[in-house]
Length: 535
Ligand code: NAD
Ligand code: MLT
Figure (cartoon, rainbow, N blue to C red):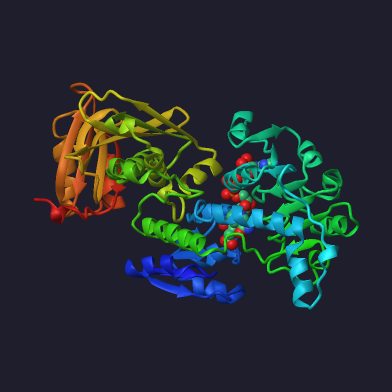
């Protein structure tokens, strides 16, 4: 597999990929057409914040399975487009949290004590001791905007340095804030008005873009602002103006709306603004951590295993995966059979779990059932985009579970409905890995769900099965297996034929012409690549 790495990522991660037998190609300056060319045959892409992974990239990258973000923020990745193209987006949200928190604390000190400015004066030969009168953080109030992973680590560190903590985060409760020694306020302005130093730790979202503008900086007043989260959250022109005119005492900025920041940015022109070039995560330990976490996720995606931090695909605990793995293909197959039998019309899909499987986390199994349902209707459907396809088509998806299962240890039933029409296909695993379809539309069968099949609804009359056999025989289609079930004697019956070759339209027409045949449907499934391995 080819992994294209477009931003510098630690070798610890890249070596893992190479050791796994994959080709790692780096291209740190790739843009425009060059990027599209390089990604065309890539199976995975690894980026940091420097590469814009746009719809055009996903369109060019037909083989792409996963984009790994060696870090937290995914605002440079069009996750919606990734989902539409069935590509997993996974980040590495833990590995650089401490580094980002430490950088925030360092930037708060740098701004409060004018360390970079004094450094430059001294290296220029000036002993400007009398010009710098700093602010002590001990005893002053820290306003934290966003008490997530980084915000919490900042809270711990600055609480330890004797600051009072006030938090604004509309998505946490008071108890959570109190765990970090902080008071939660319900209004951003309250937080800003009380802070001597405010640190920003929200993601960049439509909701947070520009959330700190001229009015908020006015409210913050005689204080310091530190932004090591994302450019765009704080209005850069307003911040430069507020520090330049003395509204704010100073600021420290690690992240910019456009990176690399333009030399003309007003933020670079104001003496009391400390800047660093997006260094929050740039420690050896953090880079090693995120590179390894990202590589492991790429390897998991290549192995078709759940990806721990997938943002747009069902993820599953590594330890829980073996229990659901055998059901992924079974659910996919049940979905495929059901939709073919209902003639590709679907308004609703229900996936019902019975027995042992009902005790597991089945989100991934349901996604596989949807992949089966939509696989014949849409191009390149996988477990990443199948739930989204259902949503886009207005198909209602329900998942239900019962612990009891009368005849089998576990059963997965996929039911597709269109108005009053509905069809269910129920599957199980024999000996834990031998998939069988055991019910179709309520009829008890025992069919191996592989290769070509014919499902016939017919009147339960003498000679019908012989007639079907002779039509298949005349067409030189060999029957590999046959399972017949009926409602009542002389009522309707359903027969599944596993075939060595597909039936033609002519065969289906010949069968359908007979009054005793209610419906004959051709089902095409994957070949059984496990057959040769069976005793
Ligand atoms: P997180 O998702 O763990 O936490 C974000 C917090 O923001 C959550 O608690 C959420 O409830 C809160 N939030 C969301 N919307 C909000 C709003 N409108 N107002 C107030 N709070 C809001 O994220 P994280 O891992 O802590 O990362 C925080 C930020 O730091 C992100 O922007 C991330 O990209 C950035 N980051 C930067 C660097 C760097 O190198 N400078 C390194 C790591 C992380
Ligand atoms: C992140 O979101 O993890 C940071 O911006 C770190 C980075 O990749 O530079």
